[in-house]
Amino acid sequence: MITKPNSVVKNAFLNFGLSKASLISHALVQANSYFKESINWRRVVATYVSSVGNQFSLLSFNIGESDDLTAVGFFAEEARSNFYLSSITIYDKQNGRLRISRDNMATAEDSELLFA
Image 1 (cartoon, rainbow, N blue to C red):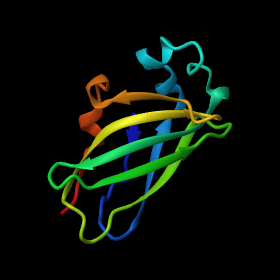
Image 2: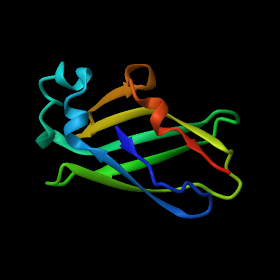
Image 3: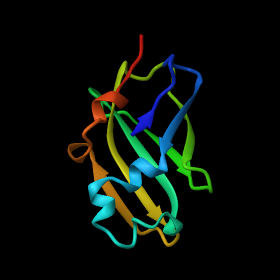
Image 4: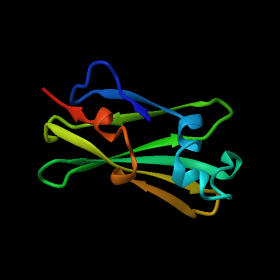
């Protein structure tokens, strides 16, 4: 669901992508008549959590006309070496939300971040 940069390094700005169409096609989104209409979305937030130490990073994707959403992430030099995608949350224009947990993402492992 989320595309990550080819080179994942700490202490640098990293560009991430998310397909609006693939998110809309997710079963939890399809089951919600309100959130399956992207016109109701304000932003999408992906939450990454470290495998140890409970560090986290939020990637905020702003909603636009394009199907390809983008976000910029930053992981400090002191960040842990392994982060996994914990959830993706869609927010509406009044801060209502629909949360898709890792357990409900078939491809969550593909979004894992391993820093050297």
